[in-house]
Length: 276
Image (spheres, rainbow, N blue to C red):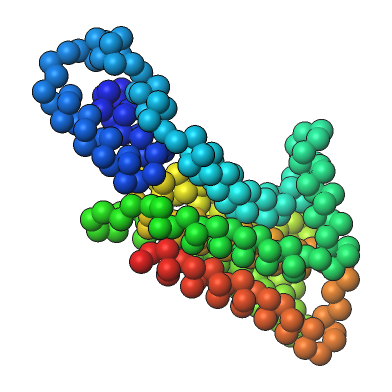
């Protein structure tokens, strides 16, 4: 459906301008266009294209700051989940490029081999969460909670629960957990499916981040929980792929329990703050 001139002005203003300024610009143009009988073609010719009109009003420093914030939050969201997905693509024999993605895959392997996985995972979560909560006051809050937010959060919570269930199954392998009953082919399918599942759940946070800027700051909760899923997926699937894990050592699982508990707890607290 083709958007009206006012709709395009609204979208451009909310993306490029701080909330208070965007609201003022939209209200001004709403009043102007209500009284203006010119066609959209005339408006575009005489007033200008909506994006160009808003661009003339933006403060370059403020907009560049938002783009940097958006880029940083996007990287924290997608890189951990993407790292989990790359391993699955490699296992399935799928080629995924010649430069960036193989380099990223090699970087994760380097972190794991030097025992840096936990600091990296916690770093992604803290950096993404801290940036999100810093940006939160810049968003608008109008009316009731957007209808789609709660269902998306419930789906993401289901994802978090699935990775905790997988961790419990790994812990109980010596006692004959469900994982000991599956064939190699079934295990590979479960492994690939969970990695893709984690990536898709994390990906929900990206459009939520856009909606946070343009419509309602409470969309940030979907981003924060997507970030939590992303990092938890990276952590648990890394454990599942570990070749140095000795399940016969008593209490081997306790450090992982603490790590996953901290990651999940921080994510849930951040999600609650973002909903306020």
